[in-house]
Image (cartoon, rainbow, N blue to C red; front, side):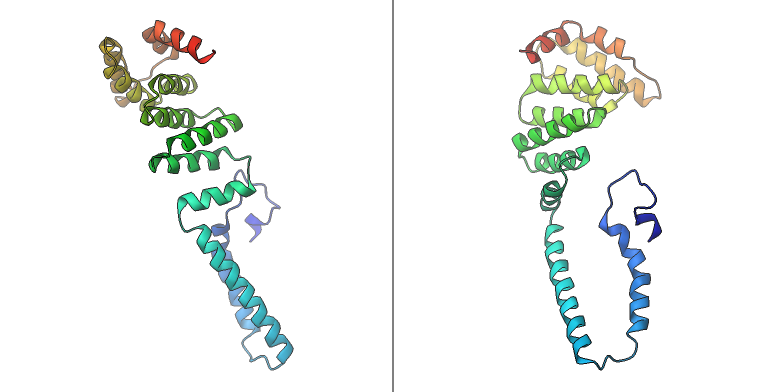
Length: 209
C-alpha cells in the first residue's frame, strides 16, 4: 500500500485498480481475524451492514465502468483539470460519430495542455471526419509545429492535399516526408513551412478572423 499512500509523490492520478493487488493482502489479514465465528449479535449486524454498503457501492461503480463513454463522463464530473480525460472522452465520441462533442472536448484538452502533437492531431481527425477540411488542415499543421516528425499528421496532410484539386505536388511532398520518417530520417519544421507556402499563410489569416 505504501506506493499509493500519498507519502511518495506520483506523476499520475491515482487509479483504483492499482489497489486490487494490495487489497488481497488486507483481505487475508481480515480473514485471519474473522477465522473464528462471531457470536456477538451486534458485531454480526454491523458486519452485515458494512458488507451491504460495500456491495451497493461496488454495484454502482461497476455501472460506471460499463462503457468507456460512461466511465470518462463520470470521471470528468470529479476532475475538470485532466487533459488526458478530455482527450480520451473525445476519442470515444469521435469513434461513435459524435464529432461536434468530440471537437469540443479536444479543445478543452488543448486549453488545459497544448504540448502534445497527438491531441492536435486527434482534433484534426475529428474536423476531417466532420468534413471541415480547412480546420483539419490547421490542426495537423499545429501538430507538426509541436512535433515535426509526427508521421500520422504527415500522412493526413498527404491525404488532404490528395483530395484537393491542384495540390498534388504538395501531396507528393508529404508522401516523401512520410517515407523519410519511416526509413528513420527526420523532417524539420522549416521544410514543412517551405513546402506549404501560401497554404498556411491563408489558413492563419482565416483562423484569426
